[in-house]
Image 1 (tube, helix red, strand yellow):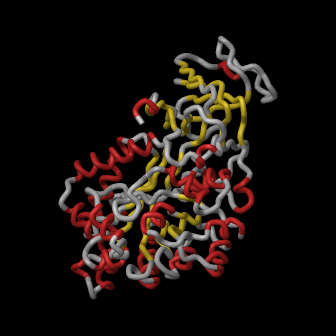
Image 2 (image 1 turned 90 degrees about the vertical axis):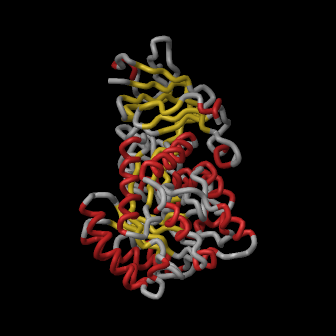
Image 3 (image 1 turned 180 degrees about the horizontal axis):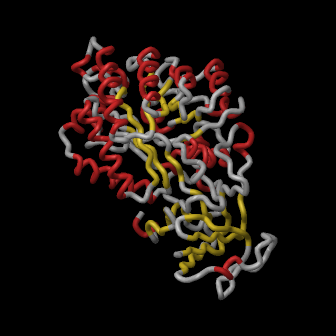
Length: 437
């Protein structure tokens, strides 16, 4: 079986001897690392790790790890990577994106600069409705090609797992088209991808004044077909002011759960919408955005299994208030941070930048921000049993940095790509990224 030995690691980040599904509250500041380390990958799994220095036979001298020579059972073919002066991280897990879309929306970006709000642009037929029009006019093959370019970009920036939502279809045929594109991406990309059905992303122009009829369409036609073709892992609703109400959301999530689709919900981005409460009611895996989150919402979340997912890219791009991440953690909650990669409100999937924003804007410690973009992000996708940390038996999704001083340098140097090499599923995804960055 193919093996990779990463030797001379300056520091191995986010290791778990006893893996957890997520980390909350004060525990988010307790990041475990290992200096002067090695890591052994076998097949697509992390087989072992420890401290020590490789000898000429690629054995490891014991320096307290309790393993005298983990290389004694290594069989060819063996690839050895020298990580001198470099850190090794688990790959980022981006738990909220809309990266399957057609074209861009930079004209709306200019409208935002001129003072139009997100809701005003949507009412004029822009925003999500603009993306729906473009997607309708674009073939599945072209959508796959465009999305692959974005996936390759985020791989090179350190992402190893990503959630992708539908929601730019808004008709039965186009929602299914989006989800089939995501299924194709799962087949051809080395990334771990989870798929979320978001038929209730916006109200199509044809249904203005008939929102209940569109909700009926989502429930009676979209959900059954999505389920029959097994196109989605989760279901989502944009429950917020100017979009879908608590009552709409309740109906849709109830229908989705009858087909085995667990909720992931857009909530409280634009106002105190009640979305958090309805998400918790239906045992949502995650509640996302959360710019408007007060004491009642935090108390509701503490009693739940839902992961709060904060999307700093959208708040930054739309110049909105920031979600109270610091208060959430101090109250004992976990938090995840994701990119919200989409053409209208967060046109970037750079999780290194999200890591920096978590520290700069939301006042997370670097240790907390690393958990928020790795293990807790994996939880928000339902894959933290396999991804999000360095642990024996977990999938070998990780990246090797360029020569850097400390893990604190990752959020500190917010304007550059610190990733030099990526390993996904135990395979080197791209060597010498630095030369092409």
